[in-house]
Image 1 (cartoon, rainbow, N blue to C red):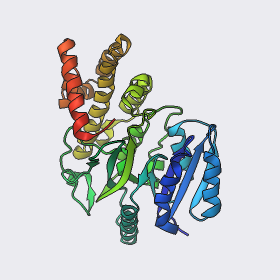
Image 2 (image 1 turned 60 degrees about the vertical axis):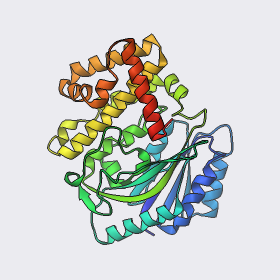
Image 3 (image 1 turned 90 degrees about the vertical axis):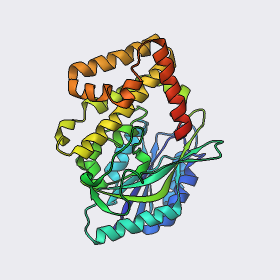
Length: 341
């Protein structure tokens, strides 16, 4: 039976969360497959849970065990095993709104029957932050016309700070494979590469305005926890450099809307890297921040200038101690507005 949608769930010692995640997807039925990737779990019964789901739902769930290689390596394995026409990644501690998932599936089936050639479906996600009374919803109603098959030239303006995370994206599986996406092993924050590199191969887009993805944040051990991000700045720099130098934006210069979006996204990544270097109050990372901007200027002056003189780029490069205080203040305000970390 043809699968319209493959869900990849990377799991590492995920027994506490993964059942809720998988159970939110199961009601989508036989039109989907759920690839439960056990990334060498060693502290709990993650693999056993995955195998039990496979045994109970053999036509929907597949348990795939691999040696520990990190989130990106688990995604690589999931993509290589995906049989669905489209692929959606759901982290094991997150979940989907089942009704929204069914609606997305219906739209995919309808558009495939019409042979519309959609490469990417975009949906909303919710910052489901621990203890927060009001959950911030990331939607794209001001940037993308709804319920239409679009090319990039029909996309509206993406404001600074507006971007599509992995949680928003449902790629055609062939697009992921064509992009030759190969995420680095044992590296955090690779979801930014996932949300960036394949876009060069996306021609047709469909925005479905439903709140599909619940992004569970706020745990102390989470990779997006502020302290954890500072401790892992080395990996943030690694991902930033991959995005800067492994994606050739010259290929899409004629596609002005896509080019603008990619520059906007890259300015966000440079800003995040710079802000957390400043928050660290560590000379090593403050020096590394300046080194990265100087390095980019040497390697690609045009890209450097576009990023440096963007609204966000200017905000993280104000000189002196007062400049650092302004940058941190701007970050705190954005934190309140968007509900991240």
